[in-house]
Length: 486
Ligand SMILES: Cc1cc2nc3c(=O)[nH]c(=O)nc-3n(C[C@H](O)[C@H](O)[C@H](O)COP(=O)(O)OP(=O)(O)OC[C@H]3O[C@@H](n4cnc5c(N)ncnc54)[C@H](O)[C@@H]3O)c2cc1C
Image (cartoon, rainbow, N blue to C red):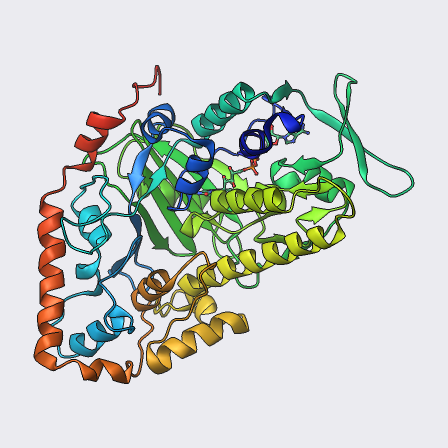
């Protein structure tokens, strides 16, 4: 992603070398994204249908959370709007006011994305008919290995030199400690002005060579292992990710064209690897296609994402578990930030400080959103979930939950990754209940309010019926070739 984007934007003005080792390979489990990836595709001018064909991709309208609040309960964090705001007051205030009397339906009856997702339907549309209501908002599921290969081809087409070799040593400048060059295992040396460390969890340059330091967040997000396994594809082809809470973590299910991606994220202090494997396999919807693969991690972030002449990206910069599919997005925004603050000349100290400050804010914001899912649970009697419910949480998250509890208020700034409807769905879905709504909702007469809500529900339901099936849409527009072998 980094080589492709830098080559596209800064093109022939930079000489870019991508070093990767086919012997080491990639982690290869990032398979779900969020809608902002469309901006990355646009930057590269990728053709969306071609990209989906090349990566066995499918569309994603949201994430369903099963058993998270309580066993037997499910809700969705659907992308896109929920309802439509009226007279400056966010929509959910009107809905909350009337749902208390039991005549406003579910919050998700007002989410076009949710309705389409649950009926396995999809189409690209900006608006619902000739109404001002937004159409569907989508992201993608794709095969991460195919995506990496696709972008490597793209980057090479843009002039990036690709070297398949192992880095044996990182060579530092003796006077000031910057990285001078990389020594490869065949003895070659690669010198450069700027190094971008994309070496995954090992952080070969940023940590092993520069000792930048890591801020550990496992006191809030204690899951530290994942077992990943592909399984056969199933029908219907659902356009959403499913996340099911288990005894000490959760299991993902990501439908692709040629297979389903699955994984169990768990906390090793509460569950053995054997038990985690057993649960993962027992919860698959279809035949496993390989042996589960174990991945160990620690949640947290690198203390500086830009240190000396090294910028780190991806897993080298930190890790937040894939509950809201944010890792690939973090790569994308870090690339954007690097392009904006690119160290092309002069003293770069202030640019570096700004880069590190903004990256920290971004990471912490996502961290809080993920903690919310764990903390606000009602799985009383499950030791792992009891511990999550009773842990102390960051003040920033506490403030957000309290303000929603007091007045149903949710406040985000335009740069925040997750906006009002994301917080709303997860807080409501995780059982956080406001004590009151905004008093201005009373300015709308009860019968007008009820009529407004009824009309919206009707429009969304009707529009959903007109959508084609997700599988049918893919077959028509972006069907990939069946892989040669599983
Ligand atoms: C369990 C799990 C599930 C995930 N699910 C999602 C998801 O659903 N959505 C999402 O957005 N993200 C997800 N992620 C994150 C996502 O997988 C990563 O952010 C993404 O794949 C980028 O990884 P990376 O390139 O930083 O590291 P890696 O994939 O580990 O790549 C490291 C690269 O460095 C090279 N390298 C390392 N050492 C050397 C060396 N000595 N010499 C030469 N080359 C070297 C390797 O060859 C490789 O190319 C998930 C991660 C995990 C662990």
